[in-house]
Length: 111
Length: 177
Image (cartoon, rainbow over all chains, first blue to last red; front, top):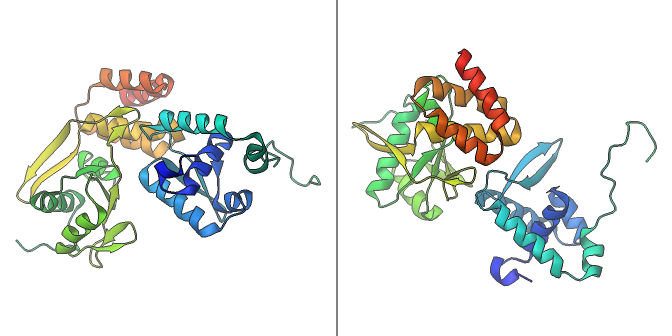
């Protein structure tokens, strides 16, 4: 929808994904959107460089999330929310509303 | 003046970089941990000089090359210097508040433009507020102990940021030091 504004098709996907899930990592997004890993990694780094996102290492994975210190954060999040409202339900279901378990599960219990 | 980059300190290098950039029409402001180093008189050491600038990375790079700093990805370094220079994307802000007033420190090397002590404290506190980073709290305390900062201004800013509770913790620590 806003590709023309961001000049990059991955930006709006990442923004809406983050709006829904709060954090992400490149391989998760690549799998979720069935797209190449490298452009997604580059877009995440670009958003980090711009100050919108920050990243942390968790094991071997680099996790990206909103930068709470970014001065336009609320405005970007509102834009992300509005983009989501205009997305077709089937696209939302297929790409964004992951059924991945998020609540804790005790170590050793079968998945 | 001959500069020995292997022994230069953070303030000297930051001044040299800022002055050289300014002479080449590149306005840049020192932000981040190096401001803590300068205001705390080296009680905290940052080897990362973060400059916020509206100018293009390539333009800044061509000026830094004159000082012998080569681009390594997004930052700049030289082999005989322990500091590296990083560029921060503008705007300069502390939380939701835009920063428009800066400190200017003059020396024989030129003029260094940097965050004021009070904005440096807010900048560090923002990291403490949002990520619970205790090192950032310690740095905010260091700057507050070495410089005169307006605690009422910091309190009001903390309230707007929604972190009055953590401000009180900062204030308790500050009062007990």
